[in-house]
Length: 125
Image (cartoon, rainbow, N blue to C red; front, side):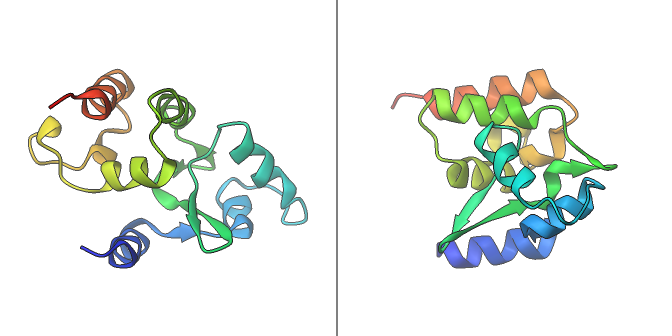
């Protein structure tokens, strides 16, 4: 599957938000776009690179805040040298680690999600 097709599928399912849309999702003033860049730089948000800009997968936002497991996933990706683009793809497609479920469907099970993400990222063949 071509990567642009992957991003279109993710966007259609969860949305790929602009910084302004992230502010809206987090109920923050729309005038402080820099806060989104700071949150990304601080590892509080997942962001994919699309061209020269970042897009923020909508699945990480719930009820006006970032899902609690997101910073730990960002940290894990950094630790195992996985790009955030690769992590987002892993989260959004069916996984044998979850019996065919998409890992993103398990954001509310942080320990299991992190354990399986680490196992998948560090498996040796």
